[in-house]
Amino acid sequence: MTIHKAGYSTLRNILIGLQIIHLIAIRYWPMGHEAYHLFVFASCCCYGFILHFFRHPKRKIHLQPGKILSPADGTVIAIKEVQEEEYFKAKKQQVSIYISSLDVHVNRYPISGIVRFFKYHAGKYLLAFHPKSSTKNERTTIVVENERGIQVLFRQIAGFVARRIIYYVEEGEQVQQGDECGFIKLGSRMDLFLPLEAKIKVGLQERVKGGLSV
Image 1 (tube, one colour):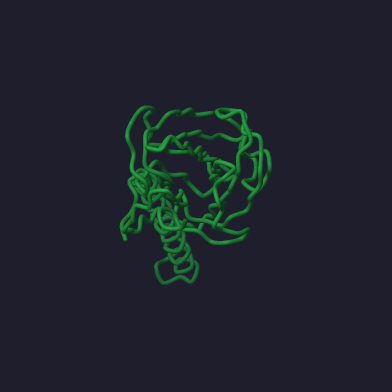
Image 2 (cartoon, one colour):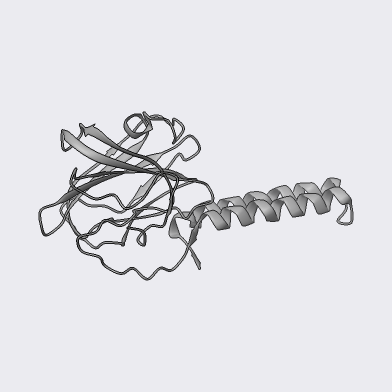
C-alpha cells in the first residue's frame, strides 16, 4: 500500500497545520491534561483518515479484450438507457458508480485504445446521487476507442464535498485498460456510457473495484 501522488501536498499542508495547532494547544493545556490527550487523539484520527483517503493499493490488472472494466471503486447506483448528448448524441446504456469517501479514489481506463475525445467542464457541486450531477457538476468527459472501433465514454464527476478532479489524459494518446487516468478528491461519481448491445454484468447496489470488476 502506497500513498497516491495526488495527496502529497494536501498531507504536507495538513501536517503543518496540525503542528501549528499543537504548539498553540500546549500553551493552554499541559501535556498531562485530559484535554491535551483528547486533542492528540483527535489529530491522529483526522490525519489517519486523510492518509486512508489517499491510499493507492497495488493491483495486478489482467487485460480483458472485449470486456469493459470498472473505472473506479464504489457502488453501482444507476443502470439505465439514456440519450447521451455531449459526444454520441445517441442512446446509450449508462452505468453510474458512487465513490464514497471510504473508497479508493484512483480512476482507471475501462478499455484499451485511443483517446478520441477529452474535455474538462467547470460546474456545480451537487450531491453525487443527484440525477443532474452528471451534466451540471464539475466533470471531465473521456472517450476511448478500441481496435474494433467500439467507443466507451466515461466521466469523472465532482460531488458536494469533492472540489477537485485530477486527470492524466491527452486526446490522441494510446492507453491501456486498467491504467490510471485520474483521481477525484474526497469521493464522488463515475458515469460510463456503453453501446446498447453491451451486456451489463453488474447490478444495482453492487460493489465494484477499478481495473478488476467487469
